[in-house]
Image (spheres, rainbow, N blue to C red):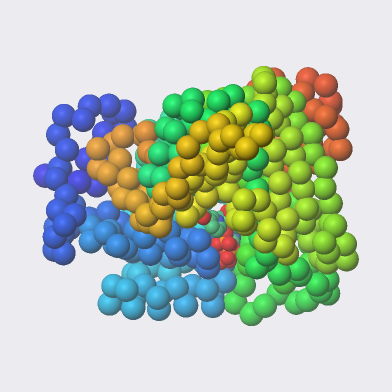
Amino acid sequence: MTTRRGFIRNTALAAAGLAVVPSLRASSKIVAPSDRINVGVIGCNGQGFSDLSAFLENPEVECIALCDIDDSVLARRAGNVEKIRGKKPANLYKDWRKLIDNKDIDVVIVGTPDHWHCIQMVAACEAGKDVFVEKPIGRTIEECNIMVKAAKKYNRVVQVGQWQRSDPHWQEAVDFINSGKLGKIRLVRVFSYQGWCPTIPVLPDEPVPEGVDYDMWLGPAPKRAFNRNRFHFTFRWFWDYAGGLMTDWGVHLLDYALFGMNVTTPKSIMAMGGKYGYPDDACETPDSLQTIYEFDGFNVLWDHAIGIDDGAYGRNHGLGFVGENGTLVVDRGGWEVIPEKVNGKLRMEAVPLKKGTGKGLSNHVKNHLDCIKTRNPKTNASIEIGAHIAKFSALGNIAYRTGKKLVWDGTKFTNDTEANSFLVPQYRTPWNLPVV
Ligand SMILES: NC(=O)c1ccc[n+]([C@@H]2O[C@H](COP(=O)([O-])OP(=O)(O)OC[C@H]3O[C@@H](n4cnc5c(N)ncnc54)[C@H](O)[C@@H]3O)[C@@H](O)[C@H]2O)c1
């Protein structure tokens, strides 16, 4: 008998035909074992668990494994799964490779810090699992390229955690932009102001906390003594593991700047910023940054700040497509058009706020599950989409770190060797950049 799991594996290996697709009774609470989708999560403190919670909204999904290098996170999240589903996951791992080796797992959620995504995503693909990988998919251009190759080579259905791609109001906003009513767009202002985000005071290094496999947290990143600031959640403010707000929020929002303007590759990139708000805190990444991406006839401006909320248009995050007739503003809450008023005359009608569903992540996971069942690699945020925007955001950080105006040809910088040294990461032994 061909089970659904066997079917998924076999079609993946055959790379092809969708002639027979077993039906899944997603609406029913009782799901036949062969129709079940078994999920395992690597890195379950923050977003990894939010992703899992969205998967568990679907009755055909079962969480059979959790993995985290921190015992306390693992125990807490196993308890949370028990509350949702009445039983703890059967397998709790501290070493993610055991989760990958578990043949019963169909889908792996990668919810670890950015420096781990490439290794774990590629290993999951190689083991024949579909993957929900958090954004930004990689820290460097080369990692992103490798991840795209892996999904393709192993025929996996991959969704990147850019869930705005599944909240319909973003698409409605893009449709309005495409209508041309805004007139010529000269600037896309993309901003993320995070007033709630606390500064982190400098802390001394300390012994590794009980129950933490710190070497496995560091993985391919350089070895150094344990410091709480560089650990759960706040790792995103340190270059060894992530790219600060430029990539953390950048991938979500810049994605729509490119999508809305129907462009891919900037002509040049320059960036200026620094630790203007908190010069003495522990973060390495800038708390204030403006990055300009140059395109033909318009610029995309990335603007971020930590510790203040007043971004633009009375919002703390979003995009403004600044046209000659009006500005379309879109954020996670909805979209609207603010008309240009020149010499007392309105150049177009206002479009009042159209609210989003607020269900982006749930929709996003549903889209992934649907694509898994039909073996459709074109998920709403495919690995190609995730890779493109992770690279685009990374360019901003390279421009900031080199302090130069950089010219990019789509694969390399043509005017600066130092900038090209950021394209491929150096992994700490025994970890290697995956070869696909
Ligand atoms: N899509 C979204 O809206 C969204 C929101 C927040 C965060 N994220 C992304 O999710 C990822 C995680 O961010 P977070 O804020 O949840 O971080 P976090 O530090 O809260 O959680 C990461 C977890 O991964 C674990 N971990 C680290 N290395 C591991 C390894 N080798 N094996 C197993 N577990 C390991 C850590 O112990 C921790 O529990 C980041 O890439 C971030 O950008 C996405």
